[in-house]
Every structure is written in structure tokens, then in C-alpha cells.
Amino acid sequence: MERILYFTDDFSQENQAYAKQHGLIIRNAKAYGAVDYLEQCDKVCGQVPIAYEHLPRFELDDNVSDDDTKPKRTRKPKEE
Image (cartoon, rainbow, N blue to C red; front, side, top):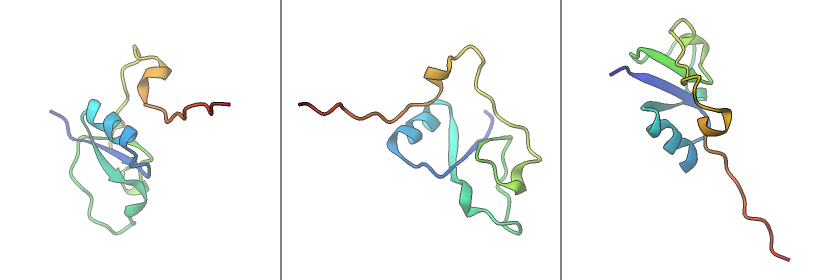
């Protein structure tokens, strides 16, 4: 199984579920500096830091529509 790092600054339950559904390992996109240790991985996705840009990008299957790729946060309409 490939080790895929998903860089994001959104750690909501919906985004964590998205990562789990696709077998991604969530990492904080803003936590990496130019001289930091690079974590071993096969691919990267999301808001990839400069230090990881040399690695292959993970892309979801093209068969999945845009509506199904990531859960969106919705609010219940206010009742009048």
C-alpha cells in the first residue's frame, strides 16, 4: 500500500473522514520549513509544501464527480 501524505490546514471531522476514506495520512501544511526533516512517502496531495514538491502527486480517480471528491460543510437553513 502506498504511503500518501495529505497536506492541509483543515482538520475538521469532514476532512479527516475524507482522508480516511481515501487512505491518506493528514499532515499540517504550515508545519514544514525549508530545513525540516522530510517524512518518507510515495505520493503527496493537498497544499504541498515546497520541500515535498519533487514527489509524485496523488490524484483521485477521474471517474469521481467533483461533488463526490470532498465532503463539504453545510449549515441547516434557519427556520422562520
